[in-house]
Amino acid sequence: MKTNVYAMFHICKAAVPLLKPGATIINTLSVNSYNPGEELLDYATTKGAQLIFTKGLAKQLGSRGIRVNGVAPGPVWTPLQVAGGQLPGKMGEFGQDTPLGRAGQPAEFGAIWVALADPTTSFTSGSVFGANGGTGAV
Image (cartoon, rainbow, N blue to C red; front, top):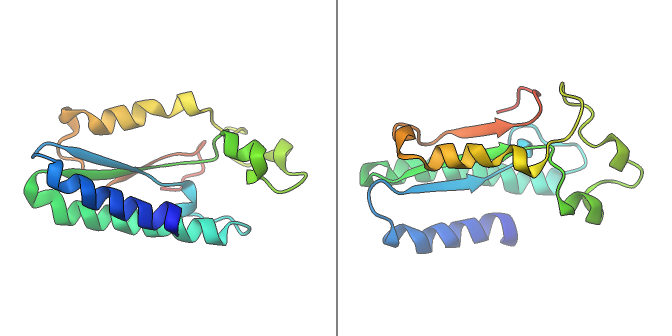
């Protein structure tokens, strides 16, 4: 909770007074925000809180011309996966349950954040975009 929820709250609270109309906040969530894994209840709970925070903050800041969106990736190969993010014996199966049959690579996700930061998406706020190998979550 301290890392995923409190930190997001305090960072946004500190940033908002510095933001001008047209600014964008993009929060990083997880597929677990919508579709929690049975072994990840604690993690999924924090990501669910981030989802609601993102949607609520978008409503609060909309009148100030500040957009707030989220990206909910998953499953993605990151250093977390190999440093204990996967259950013992499950590493070889990571991401294979997606329709694409694999986990994503970090480089496959950057364009989503870039698009949300682009001023041409100025009517997009309070939205969460998923990149999750076709699972349909988000």
